[in-house]
Length: 255
Image (cartoon, rainbow, N blue to C red; front, side, top):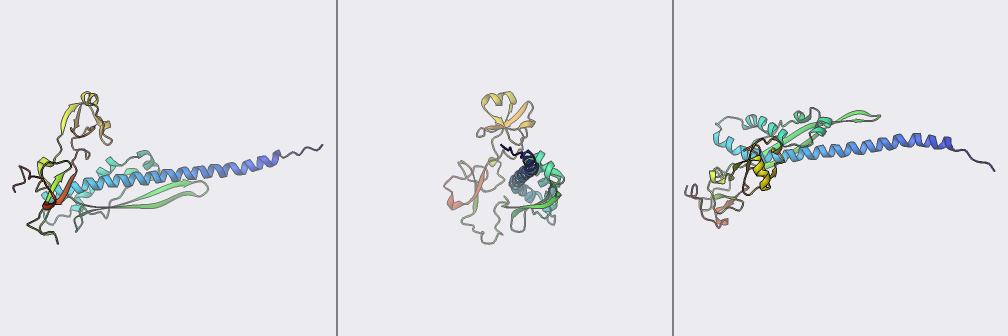
């Protein structure tokens, strides 16, 4: 009986199939990580746009005529983005320049229509076996209305009989100005040990920096190291007075 010796054929097939398998696995791993980076950048942009929408109110209130707010707000947006964005290791691996490689040039804080127009550009590079290093420019565009308050100069919104008012989530009164101090959250300072025993968990954005003193709100479930953390804020809606069935704020309602 003749026995066929095909060990050489199996070795050749393995030598061809193994590199193809490894190449395919590396390709899908890179694709997955790149999409994770893009998702992290997009989420960071959402958080940054939300912060800049609130920050625009302060700049608009204190700013001077003729000053380009985009120039003064651009560094603030970049700093906040670096605080909000996750997946730092993957950003350093795939984004040219890491967090510092994210560009906000072309953004407006706010634009002529009162919107935060966040335009983000960055380059992703990846080493592909056999093909070498490849780079691709990615972009994100987030547009959100800035919290500038009611202005009678706005086209189509000048209605003295039914003005805009501001209502906090679960609020018991309405406010005539977005800057009313009663719209600020009820923030308390507490020891870190006491906050943990009460059931508070660390804030996703600033909880790792906590020392002995932390900040909490009665309605929240997290403790914060920074009193001005963007998570320490109340959700505020702008509505027409006719849509609100609440009494006026004792501080700003009579204005």
